[in-house]
Image (tube, rainbow, N blue to C red; front, side):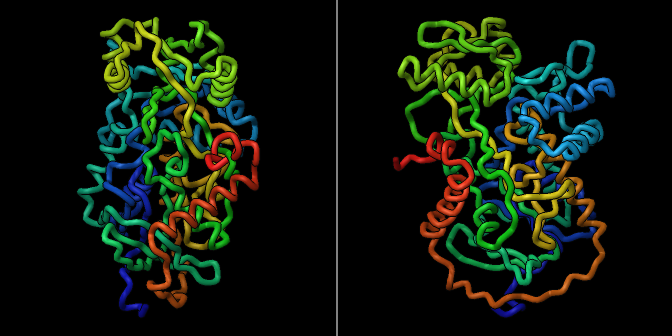
Length: 441
């Protein structure tokens, strides 16, 4: 391709979830920003986040919040990342409220903080059971009005354009199979995790870790690719497709887990990996593929008010969660590892950034503390935007030769990307791979 054939912009952001949107909104309005997304703008995992977003309630809570995050992550977290996230949380929440995000309040009009597994205090803000949707929809509405932000949906990133470890842009393919290339001064990866590669996942099926596969192809550093969170409670179904999440906040409000004999078998507010393992052990004991959840602390009206989507989803399957035993099973949920970054979203390749679930700055360690994901996405997306905005160093434009006809067809490319990622996971943790990834065997 000749340089005249490239689309040119200041910044290209790949992904339209919370991290990508907030990064775009935090960049200067004189920067031309192009946001591409693989499906429709609202088909991102941020929309699916039910539980809430954590916040430091007061200075006296810092040590407790810090320790809860570190303990959930098995102390493999980056302490500096954890500190930055917690210290930035009050400012982030203030910004969200100013932008119009609505969080639930009590009768006095104060924030209604809730609690989830591994939290010792109520520090989670929520909007019923669709907090992610409330935040993402609000950010998207504002971003669409910004004259410097352009959205292109149904467009998939299929390659980095790079030379001498300097990222110059990306290659894309649209819904009709047409390929093109985008040159940008800075490239931000916000493509989410890898749920689409798993048999059972709470993620959208098109979230397939494209950034990770391309990082492997271009020698961009990855970190902890085997640190993949399995959520303990998704609504059990024999149908194929995305699993409906029954949020940890339900257990935070008093839901309990029962085995085949109707016996409670674990402390439901332990970290997610601990609860998941307890469920797996119980299923093995009774040779079943599910356990049960029930919410005895609420009546039907209270549950419908606090958890409208979850209550309705269970009703659609014939269960009243306040009275019945609802079958649940673990499913892949979240990626703690990913493209290695510093606390400002910088990767090992120049002018290439990663934010949100795509990035790994070590904030989560081995296991993410509940409701830290939205906060982490917001905090570090803003920091990446600030770094990009303040970088005035001249960037050399030196494009490699590019032949769009050389790229494989979509099916072949997707198969290659999956193989690259799964081989990386298997090489890091064969036990995890055999337990959750190896469907062939």
